[in-house]
Length: 296
Image (cartoon, rainbow, N blue to C red; front, side):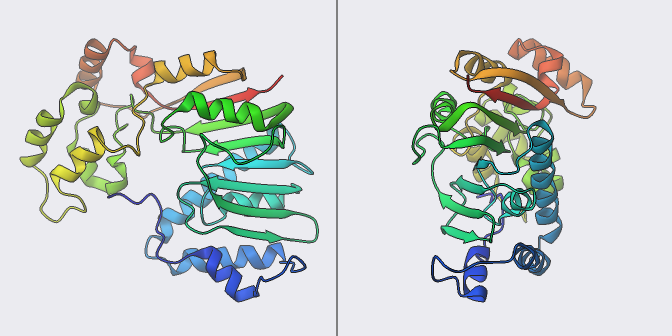
């Protein structure tokens, strides 16, 4: 299936072996850790994609820092990059502790500098293994479209956040956008799926269409691509209206919700999708959401 990130080498393993991270007294210089991430990315065949993901992680962490300075705070990253992209930037901004969790993290990792701690762990957002009121801030990026029970995850956010704590949620593509099927990971051949067709066609209709144009050397065959779109549990298939309802009914207070707008799309397809789904053209053109929540 589609791997969101290359995991051919474990960066956590490389760092642990390189610095012989064996005891609680071991310290790691942040600059050395950053250099190791530089070297890891440069050695991968998909380095351009990894560099773009790294830049996006840095952008979101810095956006959060502009909302609430992170220096001295404990931050939880839900759906964290297993390569430590948000970890490095959080420590550079002076957090006291960064904890990254997610289902893409195949190996737990921990490190400490003279002033901070950082860790990565395999964990489900719907069942966080933390005590109540542990974190000052939560951040999650490009993850909410994959969480099965969003209501339960938000309840867990509320539980582990300290009073007055914030959560910044940023994700795309949402299921109801033109490419919410997530096949954009396949590059140019994703354009063989017409805009919003996954909302308007049945699985059989999609298969018939793709069989007529799908290249034989594609990373996925037609059956696999359609299984991914319609059946795989990696996507929660929650549209923009459902997400907004879930947010409004959660224990978290909404500071703001900002739609991220898609680029220009096929207007005929947009009109058809609006008629079939009952969604507004603006909602269908919203490729994702940026949300700031807080706990009273």
